[in-house]
Amino acid sequence: MAEQHGTDASPERLASALMEKGALSSDWLPAFRRAPRDLFVPDVIWPGTAGGNRQMRRVVRSENPGAWWQAVYTDAPITTQWDDGAYTGPDKGKIPTSSNSMPTMVFSMLDALSVNEGHQVLEIGTGTGWNAALLCHRIGAENVFTVEVDGETARDARKRLNAAGFDPVSIIGDGAQGYAEGAPYDRIIATASTGSVPRQWITQTKPGGIIVCPWGPTYGGEAIVRLTVEAHGSASGKFLGSSAFMRLRDQRIERKHVREYLKGKPWPADGIESTTTLSPDDVGDWHVMFAIGVQVSNAFPWMETYKDGSYTLWLRDTAVTSWATADFEKDRTEFEVVQSGPRKLWDEVEAAFRWWDGQDRPDFDRFGLTVSPEGETVWLDDPGNPVPSVLG
Ligand SMILES: C[S@@+](CC[C@H](N)C(=O)[O-])C[C@H]1O[C@@H](n2cnc3c(N)ncnc32)[C@H](O)[C@@H]1O
Image (cartoon, rainbow, N blue to C red; front, side, top):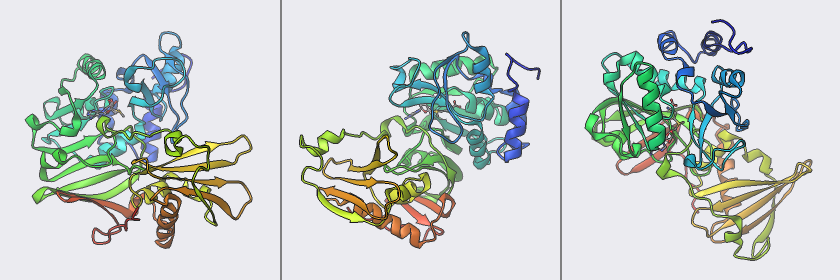
């Protein structure tokens, strides 16, 4: 395609880049061409950066068509809504609540879905409608069901889908319930993340069917899991690789402010001081957070950063009973820790880290997940080898 708006970004260039990376296969190339991303990205966007959580300022298509086009044909996610629509300003809101996902992620997930002609597919999280359009092209709109919880987002997506010539069954509702009217499905794909796979997704999928969804513990760290549904309401499979999706709306994690933990007293309040040789810097990577998070339940980290590059790693539990801090300073070999409450959160994180270290520091792809009516188990290498839980 010719140069657009003074940028060299184009569908062809993006397709080549995605194919080179191995994300876009020849199976999906015709859908990429027939459902170009620019037909689905809204006019007001906040472009993101590949693999990072940096967010650029708002871009309005009519004001800056070049920047808009550049963002659309860059392999990066694009935020399309903040705070369920409450923030529309030029910077950023509190949490991104809808987006057009990074193309590498879109096509990697579609590839993992292994769809064939005649398959019936349910998508959770219609968002801009791009993923639904790609599926419609591949398997026929009559086989695609897509659920979006946000009414305005769903209606806008429906308009874009129809304008592009696609007419899937588009539902406004809570995708955590699946969509019983269209079940059973051969495939379910979720483009909002979960910390607990809804039972309905399993019961609405045919035995042997596949569910592809982002899954991550409360602590942080997240990856795409590919589950094969077995008889008796269970599903099991391996994690494929890192992801960072927005949570299913009803599974969002509420984080209370630090002052609620300190109960009006200045830090360190009633905290007990100790030291550790484990650097807080060693527990912050996304895959390490995942490995910690699958062992340490109902807790989350937060970093308080200082101008000189040092920081305090805060740990808090969701029950608001316990907190811990660990201070990072460069060139130190011992770090100060303060812990308060019935859970010794730094000790839990350290024990979880030591287990992970002892397993040769596995990346996402050595972990797997089994979901059964009794609950969820994360395992390492083999379903018979569950990850231990650090008891709080
Ligand atoms: C990353 S975006 C989806 C991207 C989309 N597949 C696309 O092609 O543009 C995630 C979407 O999931 C939606 N969502 C969050 N919780 C949901 C729920 N419980 N049911 C259905 N949709 C949900 C959000 O409103 C958001 O639009």
